[in-house]
Length: 319
Image (tube, rainbow, N blue to C red; front, side):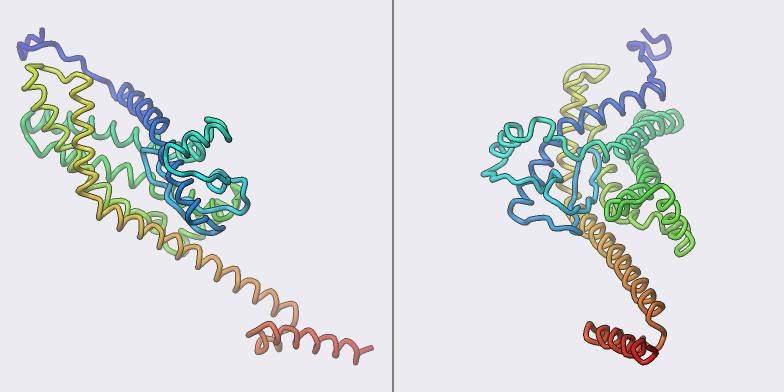
C-alpha cells in the first residue's frame, strides 16, 4: 500500500525503461503491419506498374515513407505476380518468394521509425508526468498538450533525415556526396531548408496525436472505473488504444490526404529541379567543348548536327 494515497503502491517507470518499451513496441508493430502494406503496394503495382522515377508511399506501421522507384524488375515492388486479392497475394508471395518477402523494404525504414517512436512515446510519458505533478491528476487537457509537444519534437528531429533519405533513393550517394548535398542545401536555403517536409507531416500528425491521447486517457479511465480497477490491465490499454486510434485516423483522414499530396509534390519539385540542373550542366559542358559561338544552335538536335558539321568543315580547311 502507498502510505500517502492509501491505494496500491505504484511502481514508477524510468525513462530508460520507457525507451526500451517503446523500441520493443515499435519493432513488434512493424513486424505485424508491414506485410499488409507490402501486399497493398504489390497489388497497386500490378494494376498500375511503377516506372523508374515515380514515387509511392510505404508504411511500416510507425511512419509513412516516400519511396522512389528504381530501375529493373528485381526490386521487391516490381516482382511479377498475378494476384486476385489480398489473401491470394499473401499465399502466393510466401509460396513463390519466401516468407521474408512480406517484410521487403522494412530495414531501411526502421532506421528512422524506431528512433522517432522512442522519442515520441518517451517524451509523452515524461511530459504527462511533469504536467500532472504541477497541475494535478484530473486536468483533462494534459494529454492533448503532452501529445502535441511530443509529436512536434519527434517530427522536428526526424524530418531532415527523411528528406535526405528520400533524396538518396533517387541517386546513390557516397558519404562525401551526401555531405556536399547537405552543405549545398544549407548554403542555398539556410538550415530551415532541411525541414521542407515538416509542415505537411505536422498537418496530419499533430491533430492525430491530440485526438488520440485525449480519447485514450478518457477511455482508459472510464474502463478502469467500470471494471473497478485502480490500474489498467493489458486489455483495457489495448481496447483504449484501438478505439482512440481508429477514431483519430478517421477524423484526420483529410489531413492525411493533404500530407500525401504535399509530400509527393515536394519530391516531384526536387526531382524536376535536379533534372534541370543536370540539363544546365550538360549544356554548359557542350558549349565549352564546341566553343561559345555554337550557343545559338543549341535549341534542337538538328542544330547540334549543324555544329558538328561546321566543326568538321573548319578542321578540313585547316588541313
